[in-house]
Length: 215
Image (spheres, rainbow, N blue to C red):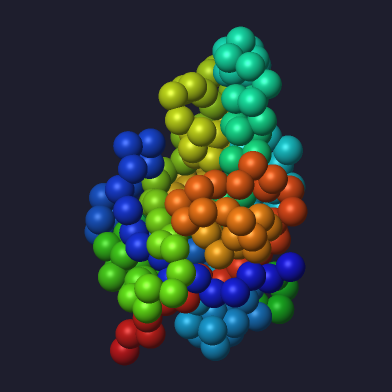
């Protein structure tokens, strides 16, 4: 279910390791998605749970064991948090990738957009109306690991959002991530501003993030 466009504020976070501000970032998409981006003047965000890789947002066995020692509430928080996460994915590379062209475009045509973290930050239009709770947007590089042998840090529930299997390391992925407050309030109407819901499974699977149109 698509969600209403949101207008976030780019925010620094100790878990999110951003790329160099001017490093080339690429986003590959089919032509229909590109036309929609121009028409809506928005970036498309997907729910992590809509991705085909079952390891997306999952916990390593060591991390799960340490959370279980703290009680079932901690396990629930860590498992639900990625389910409420929406991401927009970019490839950090100096050159285009033939593999990513094949994966993310279609036979009817495709587009590769080249940008940078600084340009993306400048393009995002913050909500100054005061009508909605602020939506914080984070930008960070994805880390790649072997889930059978490595571990994810246990000091912040955002860590699983920034890890993928080592088989995907060729993507050199940079993620924009957010947790729309308006969406969370639709899931739980009594949610106070700044409070997070634990029932992520009822959230939608996609949404558009409004951006400023620049000439």
